[in-house]
Length: 289
Image (cartoon, rainbow, N blue to C red; front, side, top):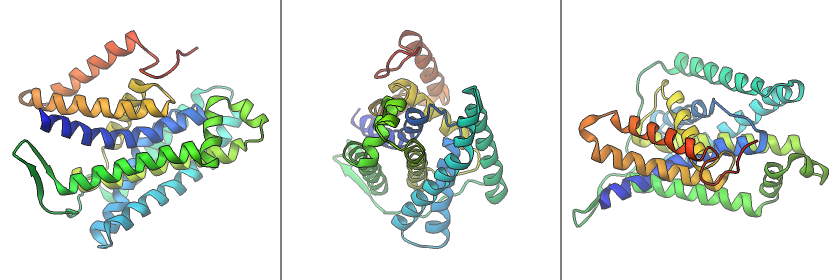
């Protein structure tokens, strides 16, 4: 049981980091970014190139992934989402744009890297063994620590920095924040860039454990949406809770249902449907409408 809990916490940290970027964009812009998983994949491949191919330090690769994805996110918001939001009278337009960006990134990634699974050398060798109860490789401990530190840094940034307070004001009431002098365009771009940066950092961290390939963008997006819906759309604390809940469910399911393979995810999806039928706004979200 101890091993299951440790694995669940480890998965939860990675998943929470992925979900945070998605829920931030939704809270600020009311946009369902279907390309979030593809941004994760791009971050993974950047780390693969810098750390796996060029041999530069892993931390340099993670920083490069985050910065590059932040710039990509800023460009996507300014030149794609912003004009569509201004000119469109239907919210579905942003959903179609996000889906188009996801398909475009999938095609670019496939063209550049093909379908082959890519991995990188281990960051650290060795395994921590606590009295044969909990076994955890040192590289996973490092990845969990980096993911947890990123989550804490994000929360502190949103809570105490001027851009963080501005983005929280936008998320609460866009019109009121604009009347109080908040530059909506600037902080929408900052928020989208920060969301993309979190996806890139998560992709860079996990490429060292599970690798990366061109076909995982869609599944990652689905998991991110699941976490957001569990916790409550647009709620940062809800995204973190959703990430840990999904991580724990996967850990328990893969242990208990190990003989049945993919049945774990079937059970998780069925449980999610039942949960949403009872509480469609999620654990911490407000009722919609």
